Picture 1 (cartoon, chains in turn blue, cyan):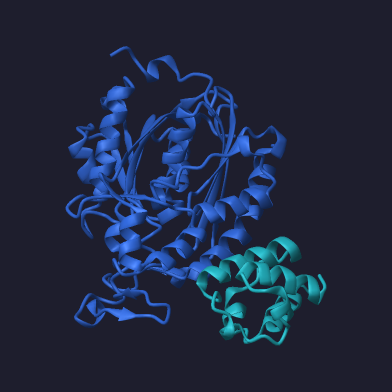
Picture 2 (picture 1 turned 90 degrees about the horizontal axis):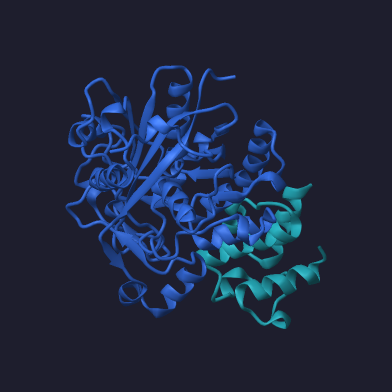
Length: 351
Length: 76
């Protein structure tokens, strides 16, 4: 048993400022291609960041929104975790830059976690662990990615799917039986090639060769420095691993599926989500979707989804929520949460 | 699942006329056999046969019957 519990107190997000519409992609790829792509994804529009905007800018915007809308004293934050696969630089770590930009105190641990679509739940687990162990008292968990900037515009396997967003989540101490109840993790690195940017890191350094455009047999153009996804392999991975992960998090948390009020899945695409919901026999009122008009925003989909579910009135005090995320790595994770009855009074002091 | 049941469901998945399909139909002859059809075929097999078929087996399949055989082999 941890010494101290913790839970999510507040979550806010910021979307890329531009909208890449269905109609624009229809002009780019053709009517027939887009009809087919839409039938296999259910994503109509996606929000993308301007070319000069970084994931950290979206995280920064979301964090400022959190500080504006929730009267938390930013000087009380002693842990900052930034989740990103599109950092500002190879080094320094983006979280350090955000600590300064956000005016957080210097007695604050700050580091990045880079695990794509799974990163938010991993970051929550680290925040929870550090609070439980007494190593931190109040954590700000940020996400921010501009994966659209890694995609070749002529890659129809990815351009219609991904959007850009950032988020900010405040994790605070909580009483026994409140907040995070259990976590579940998994990794299958044998599938790492199914979702990757093959070049530009230290294994395959950037050079003329890695910047050369190639067109595959399906007509997708990309370079080795663009994001690549084997969609069928990722779909296979998701429909294989998600049901098992739901079973395992239920066992770990001692919950029955009937006791769960809301099951939230990584918003990969609507087609996959509809199938998972049907396969797991989750009633329509016990899940939530937030992907059709924003796109798959990678590691930000879960906080976006959570914030939108709160807005929709689906997250009540005491509600039991499962979060299930999966993606790059290949990696996956789940969290069981009992939503806080109310935050500790001192967590949200009168401003 | 019988051969006939599979043929009927597969025809629906790829938008083909059921009577025009046999287990020997070459996948390359189907206009709609592409990466999106891979997803719907995986969904079909997972839902009706309870197995998430390895997509590599779909890529390697030459005929409709090859897909059914691969799915059955993965179950057993």
